Image (cartoon, rainbow, N blue to C red):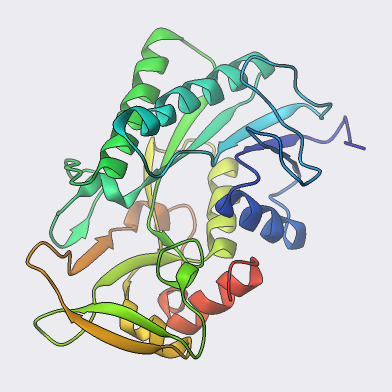
Amino acid sequence: MADRTQPTLLLLGATGKLGRALQACWRVAPPGDMTVTGLARRRNSSDIPVWVPGGPLPATGPVRAVVAAWGVTSGTREDMDVNIALARAALDLAREVGAERVLHFSSAAVYGRGDGRLSEEDAPDPQAPYGASKLRMENAVDDWHKTFEGGPRSVILRIGNVAGADMLLGNMKAGQSVTLHRLPDGTAPRRSYITPPDLARVIAALLQKSDPALIYNVAAPTVTGMDEIATEAGATIRWQEAPETALSEVWLNTDRLGGVLALGQETAQPRHLIDGARHAGLWP
């Protein structure tokens, strides 16, 4: 039974990969003094309750924050524009229950082909439908706040690859082979990564910060080679020459995040990423 006196964090999208991973992490290290109530969008085989926007909530304590981990990652533009409706629903819910803050999950994909360390101040230029849908979601959040004064504060998380929920570790097992692009320098693409436990820590820290910025890049402070991860995981690499359109590197500048929670260089190490994915139940 829910504790109706303890502050509540509502986790929307609790049955998705990230939702399940975050709950596993928070069972070990809860987010401050809050209890976590997960909600699903659709009927599921777990005991996680379903909440339909506009419908009644399950019994909880006073809701302090909403984490909108839900979203659509593929399909047509119409399919992925559900992300806009979900962002608005999260804000409407937070306003209704008096929550102080809503954390929205966006993506590094909004930057597109930006060069060097990508800062929150850089102009987004998404090249793929998913990134474009996330940028439209961010704009919808801004539009909502122009319509409703007061209410919850929004914080947008532009998240890098989450170890275990990404295409690499999510589809790789030790002893098997994985195909990677070979760049002109002989290495594989490099990406900004973060483990589910580190992401859970970041969320908890942002919920505690008294005056957060609107947007944060969320990742380890440096990039990790996909070949390094595959080798550490015990997979055999099959190389494929990278096409000219391949992104050699996506490196998120996390200086702003460092003012809230400093993640050390070790959080980008392949072993740390693999262990974090395993800890959250996402690998192998």
